[in-house]
Length: 400
Image: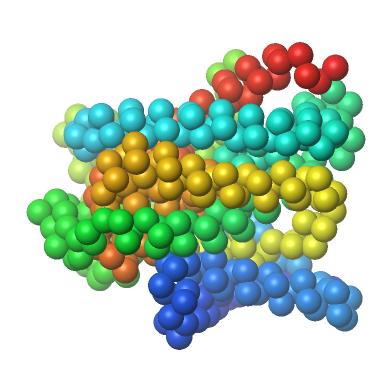
């Protein structure tokens, strides 16, 4: 067992990002299919660790204490970027995409339950392999697996949920690019001039040079820290109530309130360039850590029927993005970016969605409306809708 401390893990994550960038630069297929750099580097390291464990019995343990703060900082930056004027501008698109996402959640649960029933296994396992882990990720999966174990007596529910969410995180980062490559052939690629008359959001053009001062950096860092502290406190207050929400949703909400409240009072104007730098750093490091620390051997604990359900979910998600998301969102270039993002959080998580979109827009041109809408839907509305739909599906007389 090789134990890496805080510093060793930070060094490893940084090297994973640099490795992923170099591999993408050297590999035309990875560039052509818009596979995100953190996904490439992280999965390569996770695969090497799996081979080391299988071949030599060695295992590397990372200090993952930074992972949650980095994830929360990413969501805080989404909130700090969301001024009400911009959200109002994308209002109709926001509503339409939210409806698309709700339809996706319903589809995932129907597919999971139907597949489980057809295979003769507990429909609860199908629900667990549905929107709970596909769109909900590790946190939602862990929370609901406890309910399934205690209330319904489902054995090994937590282990299955974590493995399902891990599978989803991997696939979410792998299918978004190929789906976008297939769809982009159907539209006119706009190039770098697209949306050139609009101010890009912080997560657009992640490799662009953004000039900020140390003062702006510290002010933005303070806003993110306040969002993390107040958001975590709010999540603690709501825990156990009918309004319970994941911590990252509360952090995002505090970020939105901070930005718009300070602006309305004339006290402070958030600098988007500072939010961009810190948000992208948090996003990249979080994804690198999340992927390089994947215990891929845990996927082997899934029985064949569950692997079948998850493979079906990945295939159906790709088809949904192509035939529903792309068409409903306008069958244009922006719709391509929406589809790539939908694959990211429909199987993995919002950070994966942003990474997918960045990989596409770096190659074909920016999409302001997609970067405005997808983070808010993927980080906020989807979790509220998912919680409601899971409870409704549990009312079905299938789990006796």
